[in-house]
Image 1 (cartoon, rainbow, N blue to C red):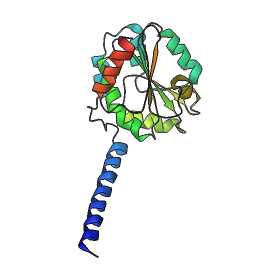
Image 2 (cartoon, one colour; image 1 turned 90 degrees about the horizontal axis):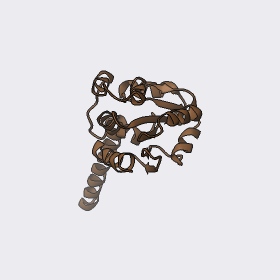
Image 3 (cartoon, rainbow, N blue to C red; image 1 turned 45 degrees about the vertical axis):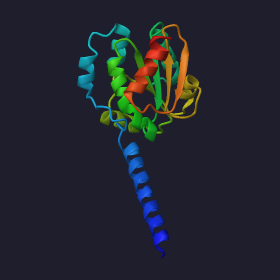
Image 4 (tube, one colour; image 1 turned 180 degrees about the horizontal axis):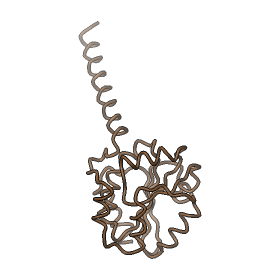
Length: 196
């Protein structure tokens, strides 16, 4: 083997190793965004004193709720006039897992004035979603959506993750793809849910 071919092989192998390590970290770590991981008790303590409609969400933190789209629509109707952030995710989705640190941080930072809701869309096993949320809790519930129909109806997309923002007047903004940090997510919350 010539020195040039050997050098290319070494460089190619190094790049492949870096890609594999990066993908493992992204898919293997729910807090791929580098955000701190809080416990349910820490989240609950930080959200004490929230308005009643938001307290109801916090009391269901990390739960997977039944009822699909009708239940989700009823919840959204009860939250009318409040800013709302809906995140569509699935436990098998690497980018979804990677952004959960940002969602956890933002939902605690803004959870006294913004309603957060999840849609567990396309998980074939409710148990997988529950297990994921035990290892990486959030301060709000998610609606189980095995068929993906509720997620598609709300986000206008078959992909995950997708985040939908509603301002108090009901104007909607849809963000496709994961958030790399809580700062970027919070900037969009301010822009699309709070400022409208």
